[in-house]
Image 1 (cartoon, rainbow, N blue to C red):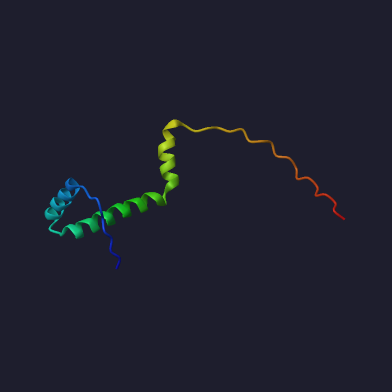
Image 2 (tube, rainbow, N blue to C red):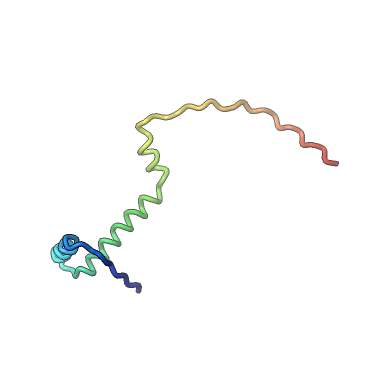
Length: 81
C-alpha cells in the first residue's frame, strides 16, 4: 500500500480535517483517505459520460442545422498501368 506526505497544509485546513474526523469517529488519516476516495469516485463517474455533459451544457443554447454538401458519384480510379 502506498503512502503520501502532504506538506504546507494550512492550519485552518488541518483544524477542519480534525473536526470532521472527530464527527465521523475516525482518525485524521482515515478521514483524509475517505475524502480522497469520494472525490476521485465522483471525478471518475463524471468523466465517463462526457457526451452527456457536453449536451447538458450546450443544449440550452439550441442546435445548428447544417446544409450537407451534395453527394456525387465516385470517380473512376486513375489508370496506373
